[in-house]
Length: 229
Ligand SMILES: [Zn+2]
Figure 1 (spheres, rainbow, N blue to C red):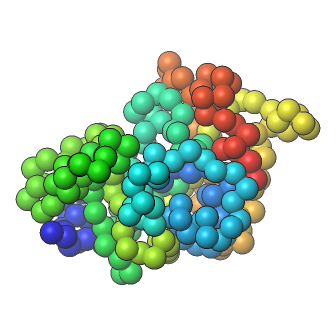
Figure 2 (cartoon, protein in one colour):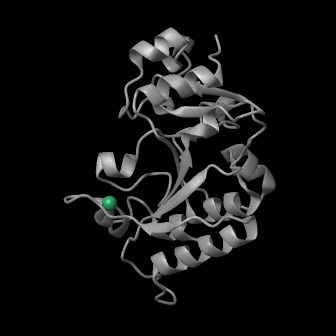
């Protein structure tokens, strides 16, 4: 059973969700900004513009969701004290985007798709009713993701982009010793100009004890892939 986007919006807002957050690589985020929309992994692949393939937890055995667009309701980097595996760019969208999604459907996962297999029942994957969502959605859970489905792989950003938070891995490229953060900042600024956006890009301020610098330094999150243009 599908839940009306308006109800999802009301319930999530009631639970304390104020923003919808999408993390991605610099390359993909720049593509989104230039085109004024988020895009599914499948859509990006079809465009054939992607030089690198950032790791995705939503691919592989879950083909049916490969053309959907996933977002978090919390800042995973901040909550997990580690770099987001999908990329160093966090696009912060106004929660209003949920009820202004004219082209598609909004669903909320009950468990992270990484945990799904062919035997996982629909009711364990997704919230199935407004009642279910109202009772069991927990603000702060990494499992509960907002998914824009059946949108043909594109979600217009309209005026819902509020700001961009960018990680600073404090590293330089091997070849030309260029600072990753500055390079990414410049690319995002340019992409915003081309897309007609003008929102602040903030350097991420991490909690004490955040592991992200180690994640990048040790290559657990590959800075070359994630900051590649
Ligand atoms: Zn950090």
